[in-house]
Image (cartoon, one colour):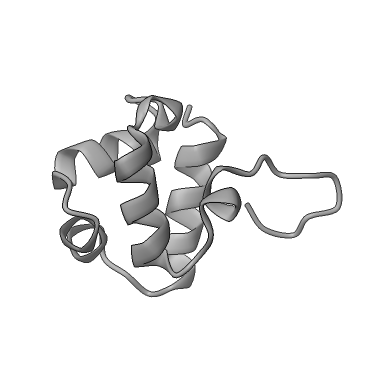
Length: 77
């Protein structure tokens, strides 16, 4: 099961209409790594700060939004 960062990335990617390959390319990371984070075979918390920043930028969100845990009442990741 993906950690909250992987869930957030998947939600934001799909919400933004991005393909896995498009996001991986924009964040300058391997598609396989991004897929593993989204699906929980690699922990999102294990990403480097630089990679997390590139993902946040590519998704058009703050780093805080990317790594935030879902709070009670949130309707999205």
